Length: 218
Image 1 (cartoon, rainbow, N blue to C red):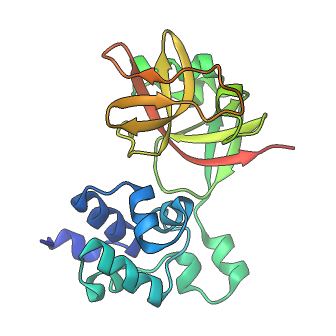
Image 2 (cartoon, rainbow, N blue to C red):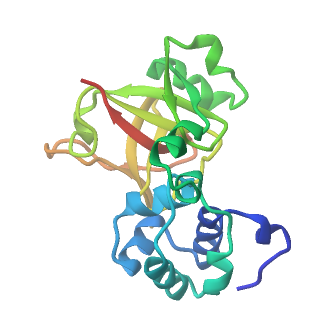
């Protein structure tokens, strides 16, 4: 794998993501090769925590990337600080605007729209991406993935989901969360019911952003 000078200064998580993208793997693909869950890959790439040395070696093999290059990346705050409380406190907190699905639809037409101007509430998270928005999901078409009154955090700067990712899409003037499938491109329900159709992706459908985290609200 060809490495650039800029890549040498990146974190471990960013290097895992770069190598995965270079290989053309989805997070689910890499998780299967390494023997972990897809959320574990997502957490490593987001810098929430780092893989242990043995797992890092498995990642290097699966990605055909030099182990010393992966291991030499900057450590996440949670891993570089041995004091668990201090590591948590020092993570940068982002206050993500909670908006309605109707408001989220505006981002399908204009990614530069400011969701803060339309926020109904805020939810604190420690994710890295700058363009985040939160919406409540109460959709039986994805009830096996998201229970009622689940908040999903959407990175609306990333409109290129990997196979198996969940994304927020604008379909027939309605924003919906579905699982992305790449071949052929389609939006797939994940439901306990059988009457929710798979949606073929056409030019009339806009991907608003990729789901990064879900939070169950009680």
